[in-house]
Length: 345
Image (cartoon, rainbow, N blue to C red; front, side, top):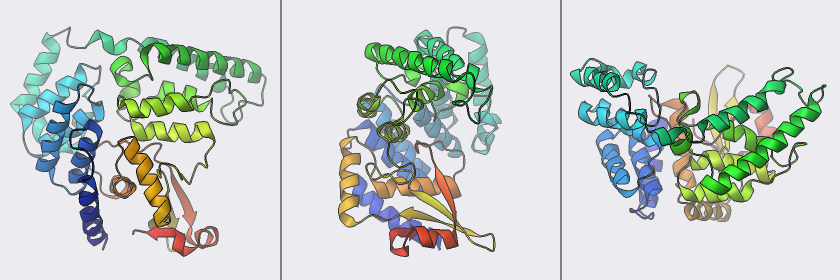
């Protein structure tokens, strides 16, 4: 049943994707991800290559997903090429090679050649990658130092005032960094904990400056919007931070339309997924806003969320904080009228 729903919605997405400029890096990546959802890895590879020709600021998740597509097609020369580009930014490929999608590549001579290159070239990693890493790691360590002593209620114990002071200092330091380099991105920070989808040190500092925070001294909303347009960071992750910064409801996003997915559980243990259903006018408004920032339309984003929850193999997507609210069915019917939820499974 869900495959039929996929087919119909994917046709709508493909039509809508044609409205995006094909000379734009982000919208071309959106098209590649559309073909991943449809398991057409040859077409996805085509659009990844096209996007890499468009931009010099290719995100690591896109090199990685291109490597997965190439590996699934036994195009191991391309796998080598993309993984080397990730290694140059300080990414450790050891863990990802444990993923099933790389089984064929690991058995090939290409994998052995790749590790020979790594061993023989001590200058492989680009030193500029770590320009901001040490500074941000130090700020993150300061942030955690007193919080971990009482993680459940760190604003109501003896370290409260010093935590607020550290938050303020870190926020001012981050503003100074952004004024000089722009919003921290993987080109200057590498990958914290080898993650292609989260820039944890920066995110945490911004989160502690969210609307209503007792530590707030800086409003990062303008910096976040500028960073979304800059295309050097994960846009939907930044949208999630932006929502916190302006004080928007954590569940319902009425500006960019992300993270409006619910897991509706039933008494027998089964469940279905549901999305917040907007009026036609509201959905048009959300899509207009998303297009302004070269983001995929809301229907496409929802399908990416659903694919990631139900069918994802080894791909990495930018889904913001990927917050899924779990609600028992009897409560969901009280909170939402059925007309306001779009059930998908």
